[in-house]
Amino acid sequence: MENGNYIVDVSLTGGSGRAAVKSPTELTVTDGGMTAVIEWNSPNYDYMETGGREYYPVNDGGNSRFVIDVAALDADIPVRAETVAMSEPHMIDYTLRFTSPVPADNSSAAPVWGVYVTGAAVLAALCVIFAVRRKRK
Image (cartoon, rainbow, N blue to C red; front, side, top):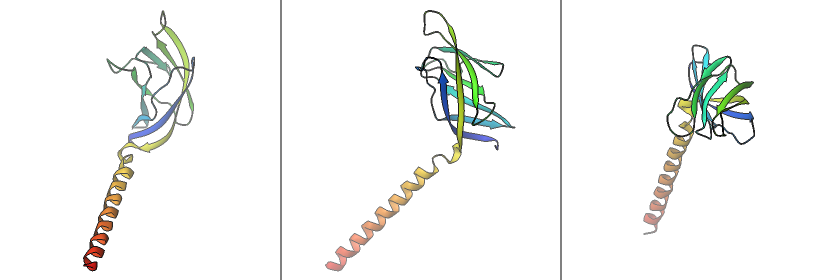
């Protein structure tokens, strides 16, 4: 993939089934390497590891958010995450899968274009109505 920011779907499996991560998420490609933002549905994750690397949250408030390296798209990536939501910290095994890259810079182009087309159609309809009324008089 070319350098840039992309929007990708991410799925999470494993654990108790109560944990989730925000999807879609941002994937950044720089010089052949990929990183992604992982935002959990809980503020209680304080550590992650994958591919032999350790990661810590990049935010101070809200749900725990990490920026992690992504080894591959469309492949299962094993991760471990520590949660402090229980009586003592627990490491839990999960699997992440990143799919469907879409350029982030173009992700909003279609909705904006749709607004212009709709506006032009409404304007054309008003012109026709005005012309018909004027002709009747």
